[in-house]
Length: 341
Length: 146
Image (cartoon, rainbow over all chains, first blue to last red; front, top):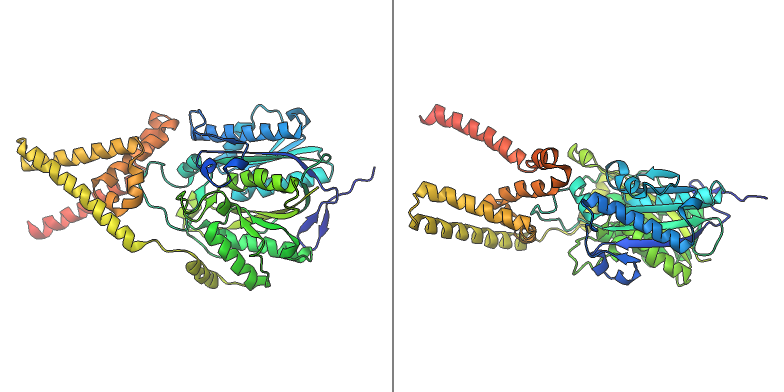
């Protein structure tokens, strides 16, 4: 058997000739996300952010486990058949993921890519299956507003004001099953981004910190593939929010004369009703892009109303310690091309 | 990237909306003022009940702290503070909320290393530098005014 394998195209892009298939995907979200414009897209909306668990960390783990189980069911797979899980979250030591997937008996690689984790895990799963190193992989991530707030910012009941540029960490989890065979959306190319840092220090303006990373990855990808934004039905960024999205479009015009405004969407803007849900510049958190990709986007690719999507998850690689030490915020963006079957 | 850090800083400033400062100040003034009025009402009540000036001042402080603690516990304080800003932070209510909110938040990590260790996470600097500046002020007062 001749196995087609990932081929490097241009400087940074990897083409996946076997076109790995996303055979099943699922998204589980919290109450606030379930009150947003995409409410009907998600597989499950929890009315209680604690999910009946004793802590928000446990709730996040339960959410990610639920997303993985639902995705496996949709793909018609069982944990026994899974060759590799690539997954991560925002919590210290990635406990949201490792505690959530504990006991499922699947080979596991924990990832940290901040909010870019969905694109990172999906890219690694796609390469692993494309190279035939695995037949079935899972890419999953989660974030929880309450567990993230207490780790990165302030206690939930602390009475402070959020700045207009701040984003709301989504309580959400998404999982996708990537297989060598089957039907569904296909991952046809991936690109791993380079760390970018244009000196933004404001941890309440992560969209601005992440926009250069998204711009760099999109520019490199379109240059490697000699493509144009119009080749895609959608260029979907992870969660830049309103501020980051406008900066991304501006940066791409300045850097490479690329106008993506006609096809650009952003998960941070899509997740909430920005006017009425008091989320300021939009949503964020690994679960934000994961939940939207694994529900709304995958469904539309499956139905072929979207035929070709470049999904670019963006992550701000800061920590509370680095912020206190006055460091600027490095950011990363990884891309995956998803095409209709 | 061709764009330099300075150019990007300018772009970011242009793209980032500013806080509605005037509205925030008006809200802070009204809600902060209302808290002071409530404090004054309690003070009058306590003085009329026979407490001395000094005792009623202390009782007002305790009352406002208790009200804040309860409002924080039932999840209402942060909703008011979101609008009030400095209006709730500057009075004793801000300090009370800064102690109660981490106490509640870190309960999951246990009473000693959770609540006990984290209770002054936010208020700690105020206590530390408050005591330090009071010492300096006391020293100056002692040297020049006695």
